[in-house]
Amino acid sequence: MKKVLCFTLALVLLVCVSAASAKDVVIAFSQIGQESDWRTANTDDLRSAIENHPGWKLVYDDGQQKQENQIKALRNFITQDVDYILFTGVVSTGWDEVLKEVNEAEIPLLLIDRIPDCADKIDYVAAFGGDFVEEGRRQVAWAGEYLKKAGRGDEDVNIVIMEGTTGASAQTGRTEGNLKALKEYPHLKLVGQQSGNFTRAEGQAVMESWLKSIPKIDVLIAQNDDMALGAIDAIKAAGKVPGKDIIIVGCDSVKAAFDAIVAGEMNCTVECTPLYGAFVVPTIEGLEKGEKFSKQVIHPEEGVFDTDGGIDLGTVKSVKAADVISQRRY
Ligand code: GYE
Image (cartoon, rainbow, N blue to C red; front, side, top):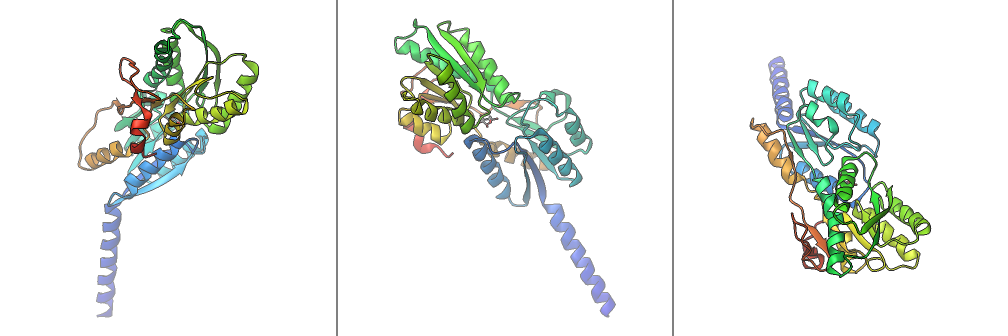
């Protein structure tokens, strides 16, 4: 009798354990690091979307800006035999081998944010990222159109471009867009171009050195808002008025940039949404039901926000930041 009871108990236990593990969908996420407000919002959004989903479990890894850490994390995910991998790479190149290993392990791969250069050589089930070239074009076009509107369209104006992490697709794409748009505005003269690594501290340091070495700076294009905010501190410390003496255009559209625009210290921010949970959740739900998705990078719709609104950039018209600030979530 005792033996039968033990056997039955063991069987029940076994069934319970296998039922629980069969139910849990394990989603692993290799994140770049924590360099900016954008990144924090991106992590928080994906974390809560996955963790609040019944039956889903998140395995999170912070790569701390190092490619080698991210490669290690991806190999750990393979060893753990997770069900899905979400991946955004700190730089664009050098992922071919490890992503092939992910493919060989037959773990569905979702690319988000910075899409690696090898994307066309590997298998992935879906990809969501910003249109970085268009964002960069919008930044410079905004400055050009704003100056025209202010009656300064024929004035020679000195412009500096503060770039993001060198080799990140968000940097290469935005630089390509910045430089492409500069050709349309011959009165904008490029007098400085340097990386501020997408952080506030480095943005401040780069601006400090520019203010010492470049006699006249009229426009700052910062490839993210954190660097723009760091630069604002440097401009103030140098006794100049940010937003007036130097026109400042950021990128991302984080809440802190809206605050700076409303305070008159920044002029414009080009949006790049970090909120990918709304894309990732239905995709994984669909994949769980056997649906297929197209191998195409999906760009979310994005706006441009500034002091007064109404600047026409062809693909989009700017919106007055003060009018929509209450809707910002991050
Ligand atoms: O603009 C920047 C972040 O890859 C789009 O990375 C992202 C960029 C974003 O550090 O703030």
